[in-house]
Length: 328
Image 1 (tube, one colour):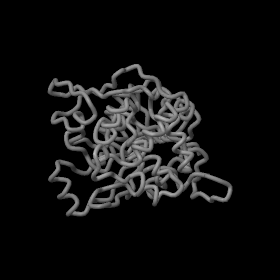
Image 2 (spheres, rainbow, N blue to C red):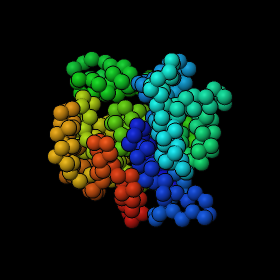
Image 3 (cartoon, rainbow, N blue to C red):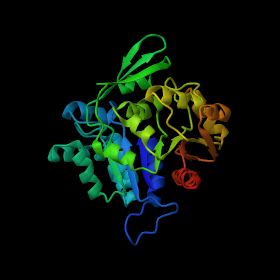
């Protein structure tokens, strides 16, 4: 299969880490079945916080953080590279808070003069099993209209908004995608969206000119991977169907054939920790999902890493590919 995975944050990197084992990388490599001939990641570039935000402001470049996570996830030798690229300086004038991987991409962007070329160069250096494209090379910002009437600008402020989000916009609205992204979507057998923050990692990709339309027109099977947990403020009270409705409203069309839903419960201790922060497991309202024309696919996907709920990369990738391989 040719696979295109769209998203951002840690969610996309988690999925890519699982899909990597299925990629036909070279003749001597025997990938897991079903196998992937071509894997393409399309990554949001609207991050404004932390190290990425500082580099964006100081160097006038696109934020490298989500791209860095994807490079590490798809790298041939992930263990040592993960440690190096995710290493965050804890001291040093000007260095504190920056990750090595972000600085590496910044240097390559300065050397090549092009962010997309910097990603290609980094992919060659790290022997990445796949392609990684930013959703757009335009310097986009997020703007949200809240249900209380306020307008909030910036990815960080939107993710912390105390009022539900009525509508999300990207500025400028008419930003173009990379031609390689549209070509990969057209050639795909499988397109995935998620997991990831609904309004700051997933929807921004669908607002880039032509991407939602190209997904709709593609003959590929289209899969939404539901989040494990709601996000305080951003998706408080959202069920799986509510996530799908928000995606359809912003894309201007229904895009998905199926939704992968986690059915594995959190431990009582983990649940209490999340509830204290105002988060809860995303409800699997399967009948409401079916009413949207989307097939719910339940699976036990949960793993806990450092007291944080995450999708199990291996099981998630297997479920997604198995569904796509057996669907007529």
